[in-house]
Image (tube, rainbow, N blue to C red):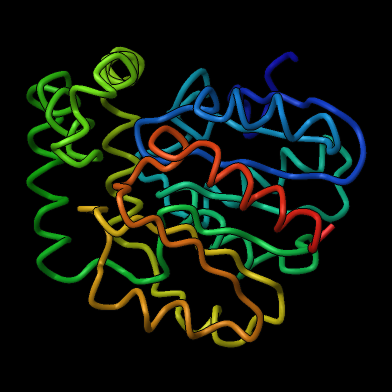
Length: 263
């Protein structure tokens, strides 16, 4: 479908299927293309909307800092233009941070949400320092950063198995403008801790976690999944950060089952 204009910028969207609505949000340096196979299956029963977040995929950057709240506002405007009332929202990694910001600002639009290899905690001081170093690196050599970052999302022992997928992800991410990469890093660096939101929400929450996820705050994950009043957890023992690639059947089935309950 044609790009949607938000703040005079193009936001790339797909809208497939009919019925109750599932919104899928990708992670950092990804695009809506990560959801192609999931959307194909889920759109047989639901209306599935995927969105390239600002500065990612075919969407324009909007500001120098893409805060999670700014990106949640963009998602909200897209959904308003598509005449979406209520939906189930699924966010992978950074998309989960955006989902939490959306849940904080627009809870009345949600029937439930899923944090897919994501979490509710803010960056620690050390993590913020690491973000600043990464921003400097991206400004100097974006491709070298992407070529190092994306393989790190997978356990080392599966790099060979998923070499084609890793290479495809690197090639797609390398097409991003460095301004979009930096704006997302700046936004993640200042994101809020959303533990209180998870504790107070009455919406059902699905957590999908990888036991070998190098990007997860493992010491605090059990604390997180105990916060919501209503939640489910899929823990993938042999999985890293990329369950939609590493365990596609398990993660798709978990989302489909959660959708049946929420919608």
